[in-house]
Amino acid sequence: MGPSPVVRFVTPGAFRRPRPPPAGPPRRRLGRVRAAEAHEFLLRFAESDGYQYCDAAGIKLYQRRISDPPETMLEAVHDVDRTFQRAGYHLPLWNTGTTQTLPLNDPLEEDTAANHAVRFYLTGLYSRNRNLARMYFCAWGNGKIPLVLQAEGQPPTKAGLFVARLQQWLAHADIRSCGHGLRIALPENVWQGEFLIPDEQGTLRTARIRWTHAGTAGIPVGPGARSVEYLDGTAREVDARDTEHITERPVLIRYG
Image (tube, rainbow, N blue to C red; front, side):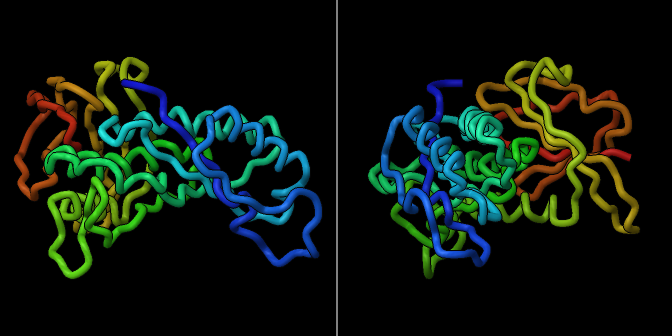
């Protein structure tokens, strides 16, 4: 899946309850540092009770290269969670943005940007079992970054429209599980999120979003499948005998 992601810790005490006058190490912002140094600082800060009055911990997650799959951020989430376990804290994590050098990168190709935008949020959902509670998209209205959703005063890009479609799919959904590859009996390059989504009558129905981080895979839609929906707004009816061509662009399969 390419190079390991990097992680940057920012203002460790950013999300605080009212508290007595601060003691111990001052709050600070870390710039571009090696991941090992960032984790050591986080551990020292936690061991000094820096998180005693915090409701959440802010981190910045991003790929090492802007063109890397969003799923590479999962390694960083895993490492942060392990560092908090070592420190004895179990705070929710908020991904508050990306690296400040982001605008220095060239724009992503339109289809890649659209696919990555959707998978950015799906990666966040996938990370909920590692205490990642919020996923913020940095500089939403900025038109000078590699992945633009909607520049100020302009119509939504393809990426913005795809994110809106994902929001429509999952507006009232509950997450049942997330998985990847052979551990859930899928090809190694395939990812899946399983949800319960209410139908027109309010009955909860199973739905699965599937995608790859690279390449393609032909996968049977499975028993009970009734439709496949695409991010461009199109759909097709299916049954258990059908196979869906899974690509780097997520699809929604509805069941029941």
